[in-house]
Length: 304
Image (cartoon, rainbow, N blue to C red):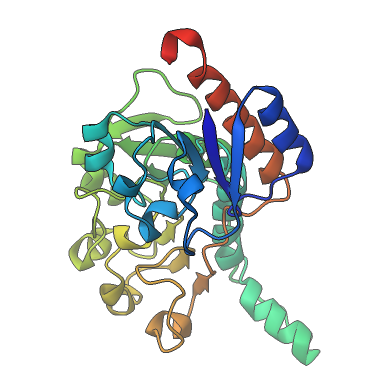
């Protein structure tokens, strides 16, 4: 099998050696947005991130297997992939822990007024603030109960036992949630949520799921956290609803990088970060473990 790997992942020599020892011919391309060699285009399999945003998948005539370095599937032409019967595996679980920790830290940053104290620290001002909030006893709603959502629920459950979920396909068995309801009951659940964390994938059904009306239907003073995809929220409506919300934690945006003139930068009581919630110094080994496990499974005789 010929495998194209890209510089979207920090490859170690030992990883390459393992693949070669498995009888895999490895072709390396540093950048996914640059011109590819004909050798790269004849690969049977690829490990990539944005490759098919920049290149037509039909240029890869032999392609049978894709290992994505992302958890989401919105950067690949799924219809064409299904037509051709190409196997796809994502990076499920790789980024779940850092993203869950980020969600908790963002909410705590707002509740504990971190921006106020950081500003005073820089100005050398000693000033107490009495109106700090706490997570204990808060109703937390996880919107999207996949790997990221479950890790997020696990961590919030350490602060409060009032953690709920909504999902397109609610599981019959679950941990860390008091209950998981179908997405059709989202509005009912939002009315009670003090914190809503978005971890669901971007699909036609979830595009602008949180529009102006839905955000205004949330509980007054609720905190909204988006670590899903930017387009799950209608960003243009966000400045209009901030007087209703208690705060916003946003790590993903409809256009990235977020333009310097975006009004989101100027929002008070908001934590704005550059699609960074997934980052962790533990990700590389987790990603390699996922890649190796999946490609080993794919190469089993019964799957080839």
